[in-house]
Length: 172
Image (tube, rainbow, N blue to C red; front, top):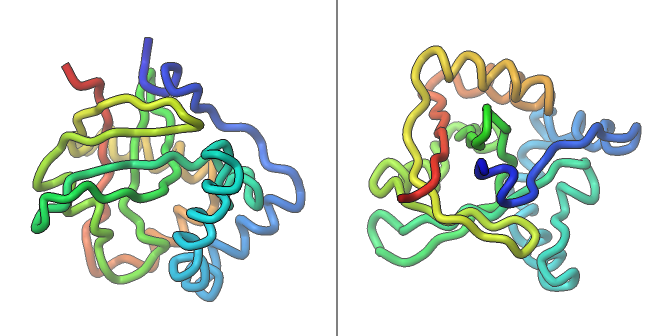
């Protein structure tokens, strides 16, 4: 059984309203807004729904999971809510940071310690991450762009840094 199946993680087509929210999130102002507000909104939605829903899931039809890494400096668990892209029987994560200039902290944390925990709707699995090979990188980007148009736009805006894509594998 793969990671996506173990978590019950799968993508569904977005409805018209959700595609509109996705288009907003892909725009420069929308990406800035969501990068600064989603974390707080997600915490509230997670608390109110007992972990069954996230704000991007409700508004944009995007299934978001929680990635828990170990802080590279603090050693303390750090959680981020991310969209994962299915790849074979596993999942991948793209370090786009909403197209912002800085590399997301979770990327740096995974580079320092590739062990992490994924949680989706109350199910958790321990994983080990690795950077995608060049061939995997290209294929995952193609799949990601089919899921969410924002990935293409984010990549155009982050030309000053390297986009990291992580392939997640079950911890042994």
